[in-house]
Length: 156
Image 1: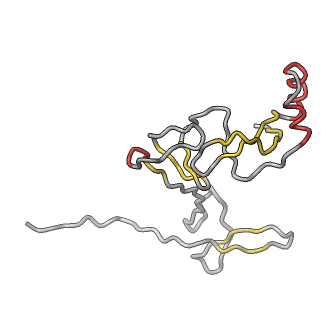
Image 2: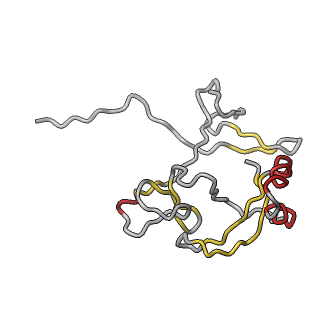
Image 3: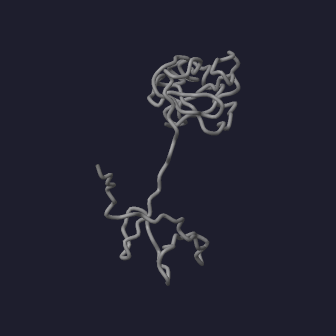
């Protein structure tokens, strides 16, 4: 029996766009395939057929295959998880109201003061400033130590 392979009707060539600095200080992206080059914009196909794609890629782990993989937010296992700093979190919002921040917020003594106020007064202030949220210390395994590092205003 003859082994045949199906050849694709087209292939892609992928290169990084050329970045150029404009006179006003901003940057623009130019086609790497054409001579002379021309500007390319995300979401629009250029006349030469080049299109600029911006993609975010994240590795998803199946937690059922790892014995000790626990979510840093909810403490549970199972499901699909992604690496977040030195821990793992579920891909879905497993604990509504708990946020994982990519960078530490700027702590505010005013936010700490507002968080301790009675609810009636606190709610009126939070309408203008955002919600006064505590930041708990979390170990690399995802366990909370009970220590509040500080407070900040969350506008989300």
